[in-house]
Amino acid sequence: MQMRAARIHRFNEPLEIDEVPVPEVGRNQVLIKVAAAGMCRSDYQLLDGYFRDGLPVELPFIPGHEVAGTIAAIGSEVPKSAGLSEGDLVVVNPNWGDGTCRVCHEGNEQLCRNGQLIGFGPDGGYAEYMLAPYDHAISVADQPDARPENLAPLTDAGVTPYRGMKKLRDAGKLGAGRTGVVNGVGGLGSYGVQYARLLGGGATVVAFGRSDEKLAVATENGAHHTVNVRDKSVENVEDELEELTGRRSVDAVLDCAGSTESLALAAAVLAVEGALSQVGLMGQRIELPLFPFVNGEKSYFGSFWGNHNDLTEVLGLASQGLIKHNVVTTKLDDVNTNLEALGRGDIVGRAVIVFD
Ligand code: FEH
Ligand code: ZN
Picture 1 (cartoon, rainbow, N blue to C red):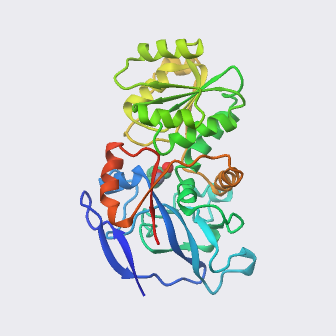
Picture 2 (cartoon, rainbow, N blue to C red; picture 1 turned 180 degrees about the vertical axis):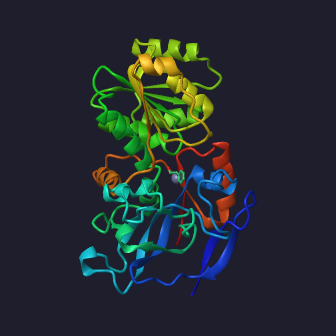
Picture 3 (cartoon, helix red, strand yellow; picture 1 turned 90 degrees about the horizontal axis):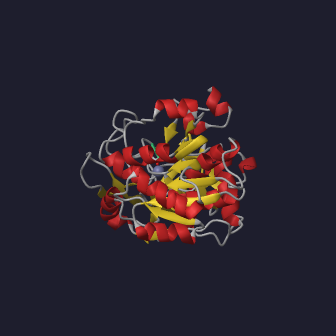
């Protein structure tokens, strides 16, 4: 059987929509009929060569690491105890560790140095079918009303800021009387704002962004205040913060952009004992002012994607109706137009490819 798949053949060139064989399910795998595949800025960066050294891939291959779909076939050695049946709606936990190292044993497969990330080597979800190890298919068959286009982005855009926000919460940087900023309100940040409210323990939530349209979404998602930081000096932003919150500094920042500018601003507005949790990955380097970080006992957390438990927690919140989805559906044929828009930062919310 053949399927349609958008594949990267060469860096910096449009993806090609090819007819390729549907992959055969291996003994410990499930074959998933993809219903929805989220489009991430990392896919644009994958194409432009950002990950060429860190995550070398063999071309051609199929990107797409945010996947929801139904089980089309189950491998011969998948145990009954996995509870998977053909036709079940599942999401794919996209990080496949080797299962043997310390971080895998801790449950942090996304940090495994011998691991694989779907859509960054193993073929991903920009196709009608894809394979996944059976223990990375998380059934949502108990949520029959859940829509695949809402579920798929939860596996990255949804879970990545969740893990980053948990680091701030667990470090005691949120809570009543404190201010938390979500810096960058694109695909990840629009969920980030919601977690600042859900996990913030009453913290005041401020969204920093560079587009009024995206900031309006942040307000709908629960931000108490927004600051459009485009072309503003640190002093201008501090003035606005003071007007909005009564303070010129903040206690926690979840940086969902990762650009040189976003990091510089985050570091500049961080109060004594503040913490910066970094999930965005636009730039190349982290530059933090050393003395203020040392004598103000400020913390920096790198936070990468999410583990199985983070993802099931996010799915749990979504099933209780506690997460708002900001999704723009699209079709496989429009993949290149959407990738270009992602590169320009023009997508409000998450673009998700849906299949019939
Ligand atoms: C995926 C692979 C490599 C770097 C970053 C990403 C993100 O999309 C995950 O947050
Ligand atoms: Zn991603």
